[in-house]
Amino acid sequence: MNVKPNEVALSKMLNIEFPVIVAPMFLVSNVEMIIASIKSGATGAIPALNYRTVDELRAAIKEIKAETDGPFGINLIVNKSNFLYKEQLKICCEEKVDYIITSLGSPKETIIEAHKAGVKVFCDVVNAEYALKVEALGADAVIAVNKEAGGHAGPMSFKELLPELKKVCKIPVISAGGVGNGKEIKEMIEYGADGISMGSVFIASEEAGVSDDYKQACVDYGADDIVMTTKLSGTPCTVINTEYVQKVGTQQNWFERLLNKNKRLKKWFKAFTFFKGMKRLQKAAFSSTYKTVWCAGPSIEHVKSVRPLSLIIEELKLQYEEG
Image (cartoon, rainbow, N blue to C red; front, top):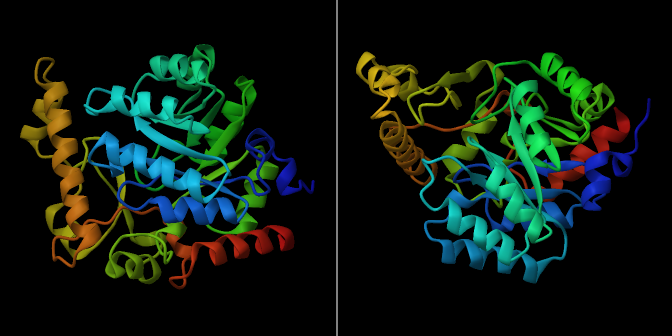
């Protein structure tokens, strides 16, 4: 089977030539990366939480639209830990972004409001049960987050998750995780994926606004250096196993676990843990510090140098054709 990139469901849905979403990465994704991905024939998304205020989010959307007319998306955390969710959703609808990617919560309200504005909604899922729920709510596609993904990964391998979702879902299934080069993109498409969401290989792009140390870490470390931690947001998250991560450990302590289970305090503790963890990531991402916590996935195995994002995508295309 030799599927041409522009024939894949994601390419047709968004009218792009290469079926790749440059995945929304907390602190990493920015306007420059999205513009470069669009101009390279792919698409990209930014977490709304990368902007401290909703006015900054609106300005970023307007800047992308001024520079290119290609499709892009915004990633929304739709649970109660995101206090700006409703305002962020409103702006995405008013500015008519092409798609919203929902994470960590029920996408019901997002789907209703987005569809009123003609905005598509792709929902992160980690199992068939949740995929069927969001499909019933009207999701336009699901993003199958497997255990090889960077950031908040799922519990299943792509070999388990992708066939299961393809079997039960009528909407496109976009695979996230386990892909680091063009050959693997093609293999995942042939395995049944309707598109690919990939992020970690783009951290080491010139456009990424993070520190040179973070980018170089993606070059120097590999798949075997990725570990899962619950200390950042309370939800399992993949990070590079630096000396500092080894020192502080990757599991919540007994008191944190107790608070996480308390019915009354659970919501507030999760929000506090998320806020504290994101602040820690922010400090490490933009400055040199011995308290280094860098999010990344196993696909950094394929990162050999820091390059312009356009060159990374061109190489992915070439590897796809040769694969």
